[in-house]
Image (cartoon, rainbow, N blue to C red; front, side):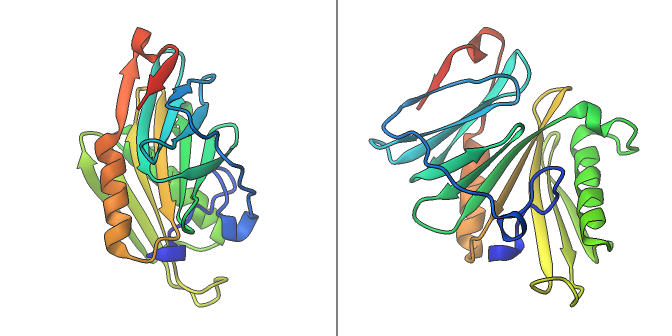
Length: 212
């Protein structure tokens, strides 16, 4: 599983292997996260529960949150937050994409259009089409997308990229990409827990803070 699962698109965030993004410590000993501006993501580690809260705002009236086991540290860009486990090499990229970037694509829904754009980004970056592509439905509107390149001329050899795509509204799509986990059971368990814990809020409930 490991290093092959990584974000590579310079449009939506290069993988660490290619871009070498720095990692900064998340604030500790906090049990609440304040929502930032639209598109912002906040990360807080709670020492008591030994869990990390990730909370973000998508637009003015909608926000999302989920927790991760143990401590994760983050560095945040405009619409992307990269988290790294404090106890392993595992990384999670949390990206928000405005749906207007998907206009004009022929796919029938936001998730599949986002997957098509991700694939186009990767293929443009790598200069060759993927040899294998999978698009699986997880829940109404959500998909698991993966693509594999087996070209021996690629740096590092064969490579697979994967993203979990969840439309948050008609205006925003959430992309989650987990990498650097060698054990498939650990990878699947972390993703399963993350998606099960994912919470969406709208309107007044999205204002202010979210707690563990």
